[in-house]
Each structure stands twice: as structure tokens, then as C-alpha cells.
Image (tube, rainbow, N blue to C red; front, side, top):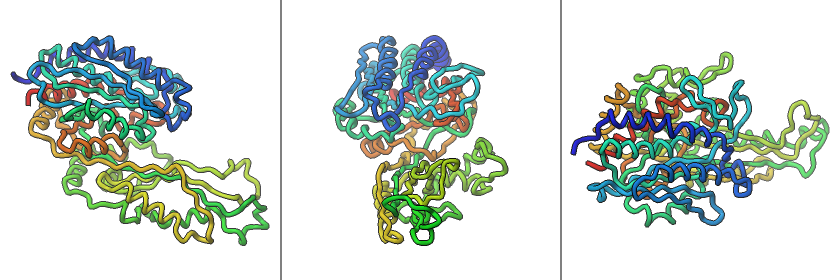
Length: 475
């Protein structure tokens, strides 16, 4: 049997996106399904359950032959939506294709443009605006549309399990438990398709080849039982903020941004350096040009390849939150009791996140200046992921999709973000092939105001997934 006929696939995908996907996805956007980290009372508010029920109903309406749709809920953990579709005839021995996405969302944040809002789906100029449209509410729809298009075109697919979690934006804390719980049900996973990613433009397919890990900690420095008049106490009592600055100097070179702890650094593989060079050459200006710089602010380097390597294979520290400091308008002449900073480290894909976290913890809590009290909370760590080399059948399928769907060679690129599920799957299924891609572009505004999904590009990604599913089944 030859490869699936792509014109038929394209027709099916375009029809389903217009008639079935877009209306349902728009409703999903309107559900404020915040991730558990941002809605601790998620079980009571019911928004995550509403998102799961909405997509479950859509899955069920597809009426795929032999398919089962289940909501799996372990005690105290946010639910997982599971769609299980049997293999087409002749592909029963190809293992399980695990297709991944998530239904939880980042907070709405302020600053949306006029006429737009996080829970107000708006279709404009080929874009679907709203929180969770691109990151990545569309993923489950794209997965089911792809396998439906394969079947309508007379193609083949192995057994498909679509797994949509509800805690990705919180670091996927419940996924290890679900993977253990579902291990027998998932069986031998031979292909993983993740649609929670993207690339550097909307003109070609982008394959994600690495994802950074993470380590996070909230560090509090306390110096006083009660606040004191700054004029009376300064010069006697060390500022809690200054103590924190001194501790941060143990972690980061403040002039260069270099993370100085050995446990947070790795040797960068030569093939990933070569990929970075190819990416910059393919889309020059994409690293710097899509960033909304303020005024005359400049990037940390004028070399785009260095910037891409910084973002994908070197560790970095971001201060993502603070407490203990009043707004300037409310600040009195007071030496405060304490300062808290939320530290977010992005780690190289192959770094040991637990070892890095231990080194960070030691640096923050050992020989503290002035014997100030240091308290740590909000501690989290997750390993990154480095993709295996693609099998010949996968390379051929990606080449065909690039030629016949996009008309340009596909690009390989590392991403500076994290998808904890990929690290877990890479460890659990070392022999599986991975296709990590998606519809997120450099200006899709994930996590920030005006998030939007490029509808045409999302459909092209869907067509590519259909091509890969058929190629996997017939390889």
C-alpha cells in the first residue's frame, strides 16, 4: 500500500476545521480553565472539569469506530481526558501512538487589545484570539481531525491514544502518577506526537528537537521580627534585599547572565549547534525581530546564533515574582523585615534538574551573609528533553509533508521552554519516535495578552500529523 493521498487529507482537514473544530474550539477558549497552580480551588470552581467535559463531548460526537472516551481522575489530582482508537486493519502490530496536549491555561493577565479578551473568542484576519487557543487547546482537535482525515482518505494508522492533561501549565506534577497508572493501558508506545510547540515562522514545518528543563524556588530572606524606621536602623541592620543580591551573585553573573553553577551547565551537542546555525540562516531576524523591545533596549548579544543557543542550551535565571515590597506610592521610610523572590531557572535539555536544584539550594542556604534567615518554598524541578534521531520512515514522511503541504524544507529547532511530559516520556519509552511540533509561532503571544492561533498554519500542522500517522502505520 502506498502513502495516503494528500489531496484527500487536505480536503478532509479543511472541511473539519471549518465545520467542526473552529466552533467547538471557540467555546473551549471561553472556559476560564486555569491550571491548578493559578486556581488552587479548581475542583470547586469546576472550570477544568467543564473544559474536559466539553472536549469529551466533541470526541464522542466523532463516532470513531471502536473508540472509547474516558476521563481518568486519580484522587487529589487534576483529571486526564483519554481517547483510545483501535488500529486500522493491518497496523495492529505497530504499537501505540500517544498524542499529547493539555486543556489547562495560563492566567488571563491584563493588557488585551480593544475588542479582545482572554475568554472572548474572536476570529479575525485568519486568527483565533483567546487564552488557550494556541497553547494548546487546539491540540486534541488537531489530533482527532488528523486521524479522521487518514481514515477518510483510505490510509492507515496504528492504535491511537490521545491524552489531554490539565496540569501542564503548572509543571505537570500529576503526570508521573498518571503514566504509572495507565502504563498497562498505553502498552508499547512507538510514536509520540506532541502539538504543544511551534517554530520561528509560519511558512514551514518546525520540528522541536530539544526542550529545556526547569528548577524553581521561592527564596525569602528575613532580617527583623518587626519593621524599623529606615533612618534609625539602616547601617545597623542589613537590608534583606541586599542579602538576596549577594545570594544571587552566587548563582548568576549579573553582567553576562551566565549561570555559574556547574550542575546547571552541560556540553552542547555539536548537532544542536549546527541546527541553530541552520535555523538562523533559514529565518534571519526571527530571534530578535519578533521581540517587543521597549525603547532602545538591546538583546544580550548581536549574534542571533548565540541568542538561540542561549535560549535553548544554556541555563538562565528569571526573577518572575516578588513580595515583601510595597508599591512605591505606598512605601514609607521603613527597613522591611523580609524580601521574597521567585527564581525561575531554565536548564539545558540534558541537565539533571534535581542535581541543579540541590546545587541552587546549597548556594542559597549555606554561609548566609549576616546569618540572616533563609526560607525556601515553591520548590519544583523537571528535566528537559533531547530528541532521538528520526527513523528513516519519519524522515521520509516529514520530507513529503514539507514538499507537498508547505513547499519548503522543514526546520529543526530547540525551544527555550519546557514540556515536562516529554522528559517523562523520553525516559519511559526510550525506543519511541517523537514528533514535537505545533502551531505556536514567534508572535503567538502564549502566556501574555492577545494570544492567537494561526488557523491556516494549524490546519497545515494537522495535515502533517495525518501524513506521519499513515507513514508510521505502513513503515
